[in-house]
Length: 359
Image (cartoon, rainbow, N blue to C red; front, side, top):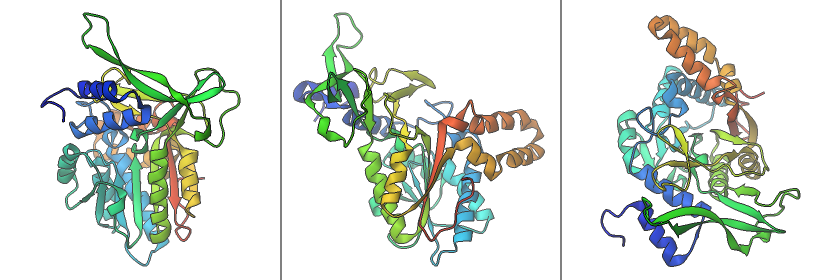
C-alpha cells in the first residue's frame, strides 16, 4: 500500500521501478481512473468543455432523436435510457427533458465509476440508477444508449514499428538530472517482445517509428453492448472524435486547463484520450447482428435534426443571448469546430426504425 497522501505520479514511478515498464493502455487506464476519480474536469472552470456543456441544444436534439426512435419503432416494452460516462449529467438532463416533451419518460441508468461525478449526477438527474459497468444494466426491455466522449478515454494499446518488427509501446520512468522539479519523468519506449502476431494484418508501408492503435477495451464494451441490444432491442448512439480505420498514427493526447499538454508529463492530472476507430465500433455491432448507420459528421447530424430551427427559437425567446446562441451553434456544428472531427454512429436492432440524421 502506498504511503498516505503520496502523489499519484510517485506511486506510478515506484510501480514501474519495481516491476518494469507498463503498456500505454495500462498507463491510460491508471491515469484516467485517478484523474476522473478525484475531480469534476468539465466546464470553463475545469480542463475541457464537452458538447452538452456548450449548449442545451445538443442534449435536447439527442433526446428528441431518442424519442423519435422509440415512437416509430413502437417496441412492445418501454425502453430504458442508458448513458455511458455521463459527465455532470448535463446531456441526460437536457435529453430527458426533451423526451418528456414527446411524452416519453424512460427509467434512467447511468454507467459511471467516478464517485466525484456521481455526486453531480445525482443532483442533475434525479432518480437515476448507477452502474459500475454495462454488466448490471437491465436485462429485459429495449435499451436506448448514448455514449458521448466515452470511448475516447478508454485504455488503448499502441504498437510501434521497430525495424522489420512491431513492438508494443510501453511507458517507463527514468531519472531526471539533478535539480529537476521531479526525480523521475515518464516516457514512451518500444517494448522488448515482438508483437507481430498481435494483429491479423499490419500496414505494409508503415515507416520506422510508425504507431498503430488498437482499442481492445473499447471493442470489448461495444461488442457486449451490441449483444445486449440484439437480445433486448433498442439502439445506441456513439458520439466522439475519431476516424474510419484502419489507420496509422499516434492519436494519444492530453488536455489540461483547456490546453493540450504532454500525455506523459503529469499522469493523473490531465485528461488522456485517443481518437475512436468508428470502423471497429461498427464492426462490433455487425458482429452482434445489429444494423449500423453512419458514421456521419456531428454537424450534418445536428443540422438534419434541426439545430438551426432550435437556435432561431431560443433566440426569439432570449434575444439578449442571440450572439451566444450563434456561437454555440457554430461550435457544435461548424466544419472548422466540432462539426467534422466529431462523428456519430448508430447501432440498432433490425426491428427498429431507420434513424433520422443518417443519409
